[in-house]
Amino acid sequence: EAGVAQSPRYKIIEKRQSVAFWCNPISGHATLYWYQQILGQGPKLLIQFQNNGVVDDSQLPKDRFSAERLKGVDSTLKIQPAKLEDSAVYLCASSSTEYAGGQFFGPGTRLTVL
Amino acid sequence: DAKTTQPTSMDCAEGRAANLPCNHSTISGNEYVYWYRQIHSQGPQYIIHGLKNNETNEMASLIITEDRKSSTLILPHATLRDTAVYYCIVRAPYGQNFVFGPGTRLSVLP
Image (cartoon, rainbow over all chains, first blue to last red; front, side, top):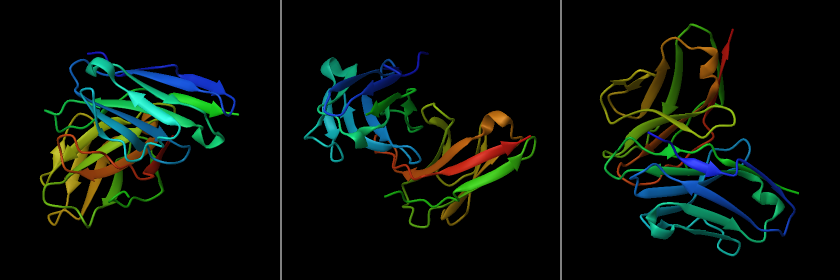
């Protein structure tokens, strides 16, 4: 079974530029999550989708971050404009609501904002 | 905020058992204990979870105290590849979010 795919793996941009990350979850997983992980900390949930609807985006900085999951499969997370403090690893995870075992994570995208 | 407390770091000799403790004194009756680990430059990896009975799989064993206020993850024969940050999380199942704390950084030493 293929895992969660993310791209790109690394991205370097200057502040005030925009950037987008892509995630392809495990086939059949209805729930998709985006996390932000700052160096030395645990992952922090940004947004959760159930199919193509948003379940929780309470910690998403909506003035600069946006996310969508068209057709309930792939998802894109965008930052516009980026700030220095957005430097982090952005992790995508997916889960099947029928499975209590938890979430499966992708390898993440490491973003550096200069 | 995370509902668990873990030591910041631990060392373990290669080939020995690694016992990672976790306190979750405010756990609710329907909340499970989950363990994940994160190897450097990778996404978190699921290890094991349990409700109140002890659990074992090919990776580890999970021992939950009778009052469910604490648990221990046991890696029976630690290898260098087990060096990682280990996260203990409590949550109700089926779609609720995981809240990650800082975890325990386990270093397996040769």
